[in-house]
Length: 196
Image (cartoon, rainbow, N blue to C red; front, side, top):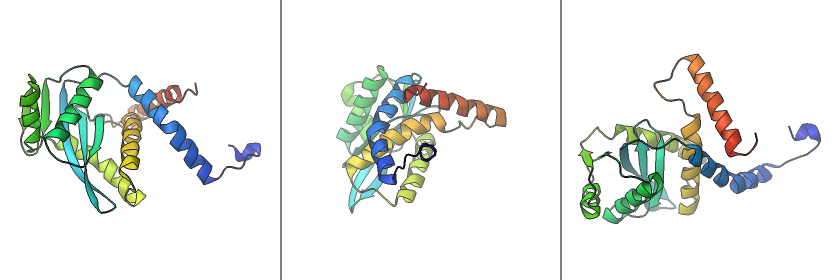
């Protein structure tokens, strides 16, 4: 479109625009996002950056929407506590139930914070959270890894905010509903980008 108007733009200019405007668009998309449900699936996945091991902690709402992602260097009680506190602050409430893998840090945090919620921790129950890592892993392969922890944290926060709108839920598979979902997503994008 710009070339038709006689404006030549390099790929580096597009990259700078993306770095400048994407965080604000992601914030606007999250602000428009519906309220999170009362069942949260929590999980963590290992990520290697320049030979160092980090853990990407992720919380997913019961319908598959990514609520929060935090990159941390540890996989312990403090890391789980930071994730839960950030989640509860953003949601403004405590969930009725959290579903996790067999990591004991979640139970320790629940006891420490005196949270009145159900905590289910069985193998196979956290599949919703495990499956939410797949789009990230696919994108990670395309990008050939990540260069810095800050860059990865920035990427996952933007990627999940945008993906929450544009990925078609598994329960909606008819062609008409997919088109309708994409139209809704584009409208939300225009509002978030202040285009409309």
